[in-house]
Length: 77
Image 1 (cartoon, rainbow, N blue to C red):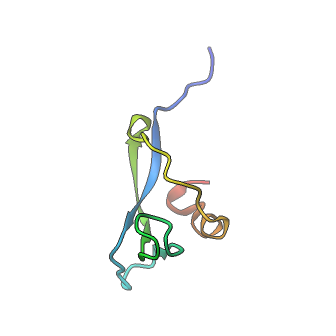
Image 2 (image 1 turned 60 degrees about the vertical axis):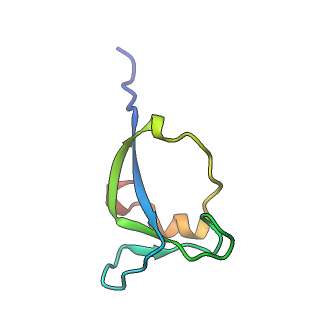
Protein backbone atom coordinates (compact mmCIF):
# COMPACT_ATOMS: atom_id res chain seq x y z
CA UNK A 1 0.00 0.00 0.00
CA UNK A 2 1.37 3.44 -0.93
CA UNK A 3 1.61 6.53 1.29
CA UNK A 4 -1.62 8.20 2.30
CA UNK A 5 -1.81 11.84 1.21
CA UNK A 6 -3.93 14.36 2.99
CA UNK A 7 -5.99 16.81 0.98
CA UNK A 8 -6.07 19.26 3.86
CA UNK A 9 -3.63 21.84 5.22
CA UNK A 10 -3.24 23.49 8.60
CA UNK A 11 -3.33 27.27 8.23
CA UNK A 12 -3.10 30.34 10.41
CA UNK A 13 -5.51 33.16 9.66
CA UNK A 14 -4.33 36.68 8.91
CA UNK A 15 -6.10 39.67 10.40
CA UNK A 16 -5.75 43.45 10.34
CA UNK A 17 -6.74 43.71 14.00
CA UNK A 18 -4.14 43.32 16.75
CA UNK A 19 -5.19 41.93 20.12
CA UNK A 20 -2.43 42.33 22.74
CA UNK A 21 -4.26 39.90 25.06
CA UNK A 22 -3.39 37.00 22.76
CA UNK A 23 0.18 35.69 22.84
CA UNK A 24 -0.19 33.89 19.48
CA UNK A 25 -0.82 37.00 17.36
CA UNK A 26 2.37 37.78 15.44
CA UNK A 27 2.93 41.01 13.47
CA UNK A 28 3.79 40.51 9.80
CA UNK A 29 6.18 42.82 7.95
CA UNK A 30 4.35 45.84 6.44
CA UNK A 31 3.00 45.10 2.98
CA UNK A 32 3.04 41.31 3.42
CA UNK A 33 -0.70 41.18 2.75
CA UNK A 34 -2.82 43.48 0.62
CA UNK A 35 -2.11 47.20 0.46
CA UNK A 36 1.56 48.20 0.72
CA UNK A 37 2.37 49.30 4.26
CA UNK A 38 -0.88 48.03 5.81
CA UNK A 39 -0.42 46.32 9.17
CA UNK A 40 -1.42 42.66 9.33
CA UNK A 41 -1.08 39.95 11.94
CA UNK A 42 -0.84 36.17 11.87
CA UNK A 43 -3.21 34.44 14.30
CA UNK A 44 -0.87 31.53 15.07
CA UNK A 45 -2.75 30.59 18.22
CA UNK A 46 -5.86 29.45 16.31
CA UNK A 47 -4.85 27.14 13.46
CA UNK A 48 -7.57 25.73 11.24
CA UNK A 49 -7.69 22.93 8.70
CA UNK A 50 -8.81 23.74 5.17
CA UNK A 51 -9.06 21.86 1.92
CA UNK A 52 -6.07 22.20 -0.42
CA UNK A 53 -8.57 23.25 -3.09
CA UNK A 54 -8.98 26.53 -1.19
CA UNK A 55 -5.45 27.57 -2.23
CA UNK A 56 -6.31 29.13 -5.58
CA UNK A 57 -3.85 32.01 -5.78
CA UNK A 58 -0.26 32.31 -4.68
CA UNK A 59 0.00 35.46 -2.59
CA UNK A 60 3.77 35.64 -2.14
CA UNK A 61 6.64 34.41 -0.02
CA UNK A 62 6.67 34.62 3.76
CA UNK A 63 9.65 36.38 5.30
CA UNK A 64 12.04 33.67 6.68
CA UNK A 65 12.28 35.45 10.05
CA UNK A 66 8.49 35.30 10.45
CA UNK A 67 8.48 31.63 9.45
CA UNK A 68 11.12 30.88 12.09
CA UNK A 69 8.88 32.53 14.67
CA UNK A 70 5.70 30.66 13.79
CA UNK A 71 6.79 27.19 12.67
CA UNK A 72 5.92 24.58 15.19
CA UNK A 73 3.02 26.55 16.66
CA UNK A 74 -0.26 24.70 16.72
CA UNK A 75 1.45 21.32 16.45
CA UNK A 76 3.01 21.94 13.02
CA UNK A 77 6.66 21.45 12.25
